[in-house]
Image (cartoon, rainbow, N blue to C red; front, side, top):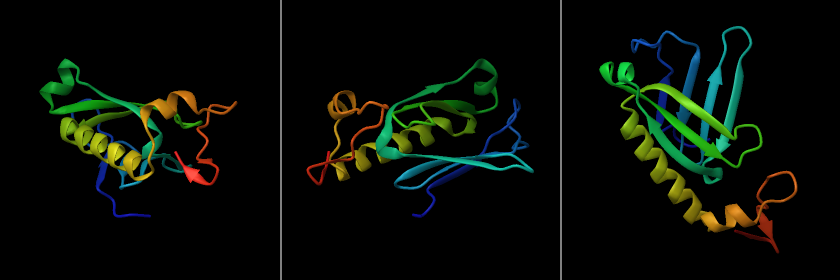
Length: 132
């Protein structure tokens, strides 16, 4: 696992980190860990992220938060949100940059995401032994 570049607990409606969900990412993966007694840990590879957007309700703006909405080609984490994040604009921009860098590193383009899905929705990582 690489160095964690972002780690933040999901906050409640007034900005206090009194929840049991933690969001984090490194240079290759985004992680969502939730639960108290039963812990669930999900991750998505950054190169699988197709779209990132930011929503900020009136209440979120008052408390300096936002929700990062992510659409991916991952089978279990297709569309999900990082809710009530402090400095959400900065986190979104950093994540967007990391996604682009990881796609370039793996030589993946947006067009390949749309055209190279196999029958279950996954992108073929290898074609003749080379990354797309």
